Each structure stands twice: as C-alpha cells, then as structure tokens.
Length: 484
Image (cartoon, rainbow, N blue to C red; front, side):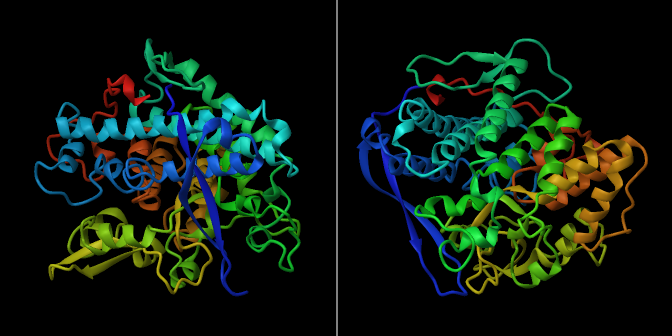
C-alpha cells in the first residue's frame, strides 16, 4: 500500500468540566510532521493513533455511510427519492455508476484507514524503547491490530461472499504492509486466518496492559480525581470508549459468528457479558427504559467501543431532524411493520419520534444520534461500534442449545419484552427471531445488511425488500487498485 510522506500529527484536547460533568474529548489536526519524526515518541504514536480514529469518522466510513448512510440503503431502511443512488442501492443495481461510486468510496476509505494503521505498525516494534508509560506499547499495538481487523472485517462483510456459500478463488487483499505495489487478493480462508490472527495478537497484548480490565468505566472517566485510577498519562484513561480489550473480544465474537465458528463466538461474547469490575459489578449493562427517559438514546452503558464525534449533533440535525433520513411520515410503518405494535418495546416507544421538518411536513425519524445538550449521561457523542446487546444476541444464537434461553430472556427483559416473544425451540425459527431482533436493535447502525447477508435471508424474511427485486448480497469488488 502506498503511503503519503506526511501524515497528520493530532492532539487530544481534554475539556475539564465540573465534578458532575464528563470530561469530553475533541480531536483535530494541528501540525504536519514526517512519519519518521512523529513515530519516535510515545506521544507521537498516540497522536498517530488519534489520526486513525479521525480517519474512521470520514463520511465514507463510520462518520456516515457505514453507519446510517449508504449501508442502510442496501436494506431500504429510509424513504428515498425514485432513481436516486439510495433508491438504486436498495435494488442492488451494482452496475449503476452512482452505486459503483458510492461503494468504491467506502472501499477506498477503509483501505486508507488501514494504510494509516499500517504506518504505525510498521514502526512500533523498532521504537519500543520510546514508550515510557507502563503498558503503552502493548495497548497501542493491540489497538492498531484490532482496528485493522475491524476495517478488514467490514470490507469482507460488504464485498465478500455469503458465509456458507464460499467458492474458490480470491476475495480481497488483507493489507499488512506499506507498499507502492498492488496488493494481492487472498482466498477466503487466507483472509480469515490473517484477520483472526490480528485479533488473537491484539487480545494477548491488551489483556494485562489495559487499565479497563482493572478499573471501572467510572474510575477511568475521572482519573486522578478521588477515584482509584491514577496515571501520569490520561490518554489511556479513555480506553473504555476506544478499541479496548473487551472491544477486541466483542469483535472476535462478531468475526467468529461471521465465520460460523459458533463455539468460539459464544466464548468471546460470554467473556464480555460476564466481565466484572473490581467491586463485582458488571463491566457493561444492557440499556433500559431509565436510560432512554434520560435521553441516553445511544445507550452508552452497553457500548463496548464507540467513536467519539463532537459533530454528532450536527449530523443528527442534518440527516434526521431535517427529515432527510426517515421512515414514513408518521409512526405506522415502524410501529406495525418493524416492531409489531407491541405497545411495550422501549425501542418502539422511545428511540423514534415524529417531527415537523423545516419544510412544514412531518417525518418519523430515529433519535439515536440526537446527542441532546441536556443529556443525563456522560458520552452523548459516541457512535456505537460494538454494543453489549450484540453479545447477548450472539450468545442466544451460538451458545450450546441448552444454554441459549437465558441470554434471550435477559436481552428481552432489558427491552421490556420479557415473555412476550418466546425463544423458539427449532433452529430455523430461532434464526428468524434473531434476525428480526437485529433489525430492530441496530437500525441506523449499519448492521442490518450484514445480518441478512450472514443469515442468507430469503425475500420473505427481508423487511422492506422492494417489489420484484432479486436480492444480491455480493457487490463487485471495486476495480481501482488506487483504492489500496
């Protein structure tokens, strides 16, 4: 992969609020330095890693199109104008030039992020002595390996074959080095091996080094201020919102589920679900009605990894409050077709709302990214990347058959639906029930297409599939080698 001579050096600004207020984080490019100059100190590696997170928030990645934008158009999640790119994405018109461009932009941006990660990994071993904070080398290297796996997994989930229907030949490059030469496309098995190796190494590096394994989220969020966590380098205090050890395990669960290794998927998901703080309390908990009542629409207590985006409120205003991304003009479509008019489900009652748009019309829109100024929570600006609810759904699918029910029950209890939707006894019905819950749970988070693809959903199970449209889960891999 080619790499520009210069990469941004970025600095983290900690804005210290009152004791009742959360330290919140903004990042922005400040200066430019050569890679050789930047990656010679612990601070330089921190800045370079922050640059990776900035890159991941690009509109063609997790700042829009891999969260609530074009990826959601592949499952017709939003009302669209006829013959728009979004309309054609929902009809799998992959030869359309606008669709090609949209998907190529995602492809290029993912490999651009991977290039930035590789620029760090290319230097980190030879600069190990530059790290002065205990565990810093292990945390940053592990974080980079896991982020590389995260980006590659989403490339595979989007452009790769349907799991269980893998033929011969090659799929995509798994890029680990910096090179100006075209990258070799690997077989599915080789790609899988590289990805799982990155995650295994990341977990091993972070397990003993990550302070999040030893301290609670609350302790890390308030370093050196009366809590148990003391540090000379507060950069690592915010592990709970980044690619921490538990996020690596959650990503392993997601990856193993994709690769149909259900025993390994369950083991990883269970480790996250069972994680405890030093006082015995749960490291993460499922969000409940009390959270939504406090306008915690992104359910921060269950976020294992999130991208901090200080512009999230503006994105909400531009995309949702404007009525641009909506599902109907009133509650009926979402209430009846998505949720089944339960009258109880907290997602049905509290994460959606009918609004008046600037052009004096009405729209039924999602509130997950509202990031209201009067939040009663600490981290309103987090884009969810890995959540505890996914671990419960993976456990309900992947646990030994006799152990699945409790995970389903606990998930449904948190959504105020305990006992209302019994967990089916046969595997096909379980698959359909889980598919429906993924669709409800991760609406606007970029997971619906991947769920349908992983489970190879047929037209009868594909909510809002346009009439007379044949599902095509495998977009062509973009041809431009310049993408990576």
